[in-house]
Amino acid sequence: MDIIYPITLLILIYFVNPLKNEEKLFTTPFLTVSYVIIMTYILSLLNISIYKFLYIMPLLIFSIYYLKTKKLNFNKEYNAIKQALKRKYIILSIILLFTIFMGYNIFPPNPANTTDTQFHSYKSKAMIEEKTIFYKTNEIPYKYYVSYPAGFHSLVYYLSSSVSDILNSIQFIKFYILLLFVLGYYLIGEAIKKGLGCWIALFLPLTNVVYRIVGVLLPNTLGYALMLICIFFILKYRTTKNNIYLILFSFITISLVYIHTFPLIILVLFLISLSIYDLYLKYYKNIVKYWSSLILSILSAVLLIYSKMAENIVSYGKSTNFTPEPISAIIRNILAGMGIIYLYIWTNSSKTGILDNTNTFLISIVFTILLIVGIYNLIKTKYNNLNNGAPFILLLVLLILNIINIKFIHIPVPFFSNQYDSARMAIHIQIIMPIFYGSGLYAIYKLIESTKKTKISTYNILKPLFIISILLFSTISAYTNYEIISEKQKDSFVIHNNDLKIFEYMNKHNITNQIILNFGEDAGQFLPIYTKNKPVFYFYKFQSNNATVGNTSFDSIISAIDNKNYTTILNSCKKENISYIYMPEYLGKYDGGFFNNSKYFKIIHIKGNAKLVKIK
Image (cartoon, rainbow, N blue to C red; front, side, top):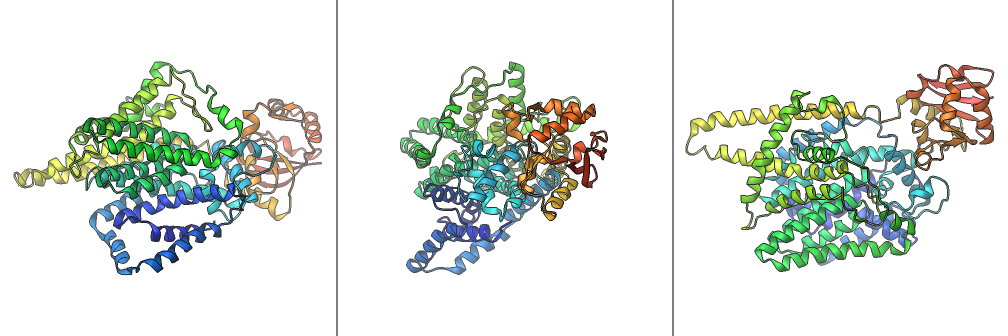
């Protein structure tokens, strides 16, 4: 992976970041992401190859100008960083380390799964090779991916030194997203009330949503993280009336357009919530500023790429893409989103039933109590004589209504995926729930602290009990997440160490430019990432109902192996000019010794159950 370029960008963007103190430090990782995405689009639209040094040049020029016009105060910068030794920053660091530790234990060492990672890897590969978002290759499946927004893939490109780095870069981004969420929740909490930030950030590793979706909904999750900082900038403008927050909000929003629609849905609903509240308070200028910033940002982003937008991007948004759902499923997903009764969406395991697992029952009870207390606390919390918490209550209501409405109303959103099922929409609720849980826990903490002056004996009992309860609950909740998520995802990641050894063998022995028979959405679909070969089967073939080899269907190929029908396999491979067959680790134990027949095949390399076979 290329580390020097990203680190250089972080340093330069910190230097030019107009904010101060902790805001300067904590918003820089978000601004860096947006800068990479926007610069990638601008360079590609100008038909300039996206060489990485080009990203640094504008920042260097701006920095030189800054040095000439203003006297740089290194002591000021040093003092700002030294503030990190304050107690609350130590607590925030502990939360961040715990969050990363949870990710380290939950995330598989290789992020390759059967669908989304393959899709995003192929698009990133085309961008790396052609140095542009709008690559020209007509190869299948690459040509079908060019229309998909390239925000996430711009980061993958910037982190990767070669195609073989793509999956390592994706793995790094997953942990980077965790960092963004912790900082985003912290900043939102501080914008609601000073001292609330750490309490909200605490609930990222205690809830399951980010760990569940970051492996399979990569652009969505990155977008959700940037959406949090957008909310922070709006709240800060509301309390300070400093236009720099609106400028930064617009900058992030432009990049958000190039990532995914779903985070924009939450952002729009939040602005509606805030506007209703400000309308009641007669803050009309605020409302105009919010919406003008949002609309101008979205229009700027769309107009920038309008000439490159393919017709199929727009028409796809008009399609109906619903899965029929009973009302009971929608209600269950709403409750799961709020952490009431059900905690996990997309999981049918008995471990997630409230009466089947003591841990989930206790966690749901605690979350329900914290939600109720948190709502009350948000209603009465004020910062600079303004209530920045109450709009989140209205946002929760709008998100629930959004889930209910999708069963009856379809609103077409052009040029992005529009899978509006209730489970995906329930993720929107889960994303904002730490705000309520953290607010509730903070209110309980302040209640205990209030007894310090009047009932010192009571305080001396309650404070230790409170700390022990937090530590105990955190342990139970984190462990339950680890147990259920690990169990759920263990079969969804398809690459084993033995598969990597087979790929390494291909590279060492110059096996290149081959079409290799694999057996579905298996490790073989990542052959173009680790080697210079192509698989017969990949995600798009199954999606387009074109899973054939020499006019022989995928099912017939599998049946031929089961029935030891060598003629079918050999004839199909001959028609497609296939000389090699790849059997991955997870499927190798099921081939029944089919490829051991030396009359037709030669096993040229084997590791465990993974094997590379040559057709004689």
